[in-house]
Each structure stands twice: as C-alpha cells, then as structure tokens.
Image (cartoon, rainbow, N blue to C red; front, top):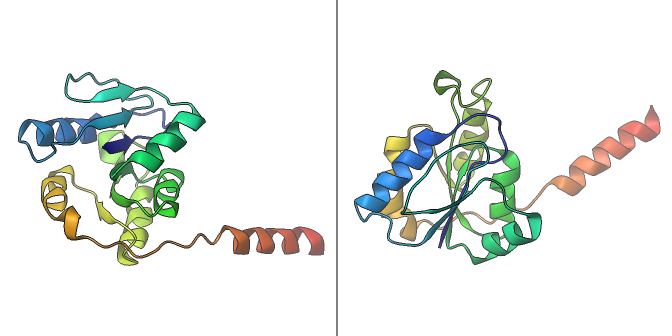
Length: 159
C-alpha cells in the first residue's frame, strides 16, 4: 500500500495528486493508494481519499504502508522516517500557490542529501523515482528531538 500525505496546509496540492493518478493510469503504480488530502479537493476512482485522518488510524496506515509519498512538511517526513519507511517527498511551491514560500525545497534537499529519502521539486520526476524506488536503501533516520529539547531546557533554565 502507498500512503500519500498532503498535510494540513490550507492550500491545494492538486499537482501531486494529478501526477499520482497519472502514474496509476500508466500502471507505474499498481499498489492500493490511500491519500490524506487535507484541504486539497480531489476526486479519483483510483485512490482512496480522505480529507483528514484521525491520529490512531494515521499511525496504523503509516505502519502498514510500503511506501510513503509526502509533501515537504517536517512532521510528515519524520513520522515516516522514524518507522524506517521508504519516502518520496515533493515540495509544495509558492509559484503554484501551494505554500507561502519555497522553504520545503530546503527541507527536502537536506533529507535527500543525507540519504533519508528521495526528494523532488518537480512532479514529473516522480515516475522515474517510482521506477527505481525498490532498489533505494534509505539511511537509518535517528531523531534529534532529545538534543533539541535539551538545548531549549538549558536556555530556559539559564534565562
């Protein structure tokens, strides 16, 4: 099963769902696809689409997914990586009114450069990434949350 995460942004990311739908039509994707679409209004008889998914159900889907395709939100990315999942991340772009700026480019580039995921800023790259994803071996992700919490606690204690 492929899980697609579009987060909770109040902007559409229809561009990504159009490409995924196209990949299904071309039989590049043959797995069952479940989409957490957020505010993206999209219909397809080829995917199971939900606006929002309760946390317990989301955790179940994350665990069951063989592949996660996500927008460039840190929460969506790290939730998948902590479970050791293969991830394809696609940035929401300002020029398509998908976000207020292009910060997801830097987020995805950083995770991609470290070998944690396959990232792109162009939905047309997804077909090639999907064709090669089975041979991709992601670097094991180790969350740095504990270190960040220690820095914040130390700052609070000293100020």
